[in-house]
Image 1 (spheres, rainbow, N blue to C red):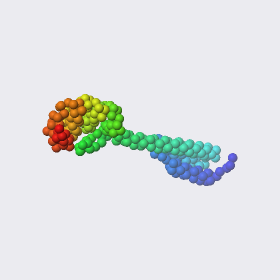
Image 2 (image 1 turned 45 degrees about the vertical axis):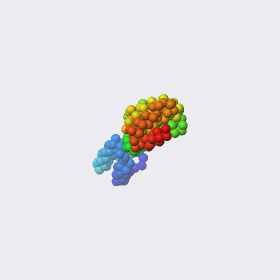
Image 3 (image 1 turned 30 degrees about the vertical axis):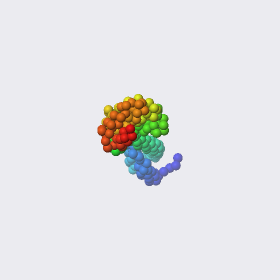
Image 4 (image 1 turned 90 degrees about the vertical axis):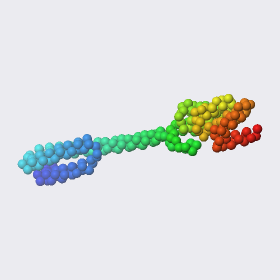
Length: 251
């Protein structure tokens, strides 16, 4: 076994122990449990250094001194292992934080999609839920493509599901038009009468009354003339009233 002088051994150990705390400190992360473990190990190393120095100062035998050196090396190995564990923990924490951030971003995006939107309907501002908006738009898209039967079903479902919607009057009016487009005048009249009954103040009300008069004319119902007269009386300054006057003037 290689012999070491007291002064040489002391210098070597002091150099190693001085480097050890500094190097361990450089590897610290934010994990509290890992930090505590490192601090405990550093305390043990410091205690052993003090004991070693005391034995050297009192001329302890070389065998005991070499045992302390061996123990110190073991502690260094444990600290290196702990540093590896801290790196793993730090990586896990970073990944968990990223997943949490992504979750909150996704949650915020989903909540925003559920928030009511401000829209303008017939010149009036209203708050409409996204699902409500989507249902109305889909129904109207069917009407615009000429699929009047499917549009009628979608509009009927809409007014039943959203009776208090700002789109309800429009949906009911276009429901009547979908029946009229299918040449079902009786159903069209019934649908437009709902507009007049439930949404008399809606801009669609005079148009609904004009649509009723058109259906009555096709059914050869003499009530068509009175409907046009009532339209002019109730909604005198509307485009529908102007059309009603033209129709009455032509008779």
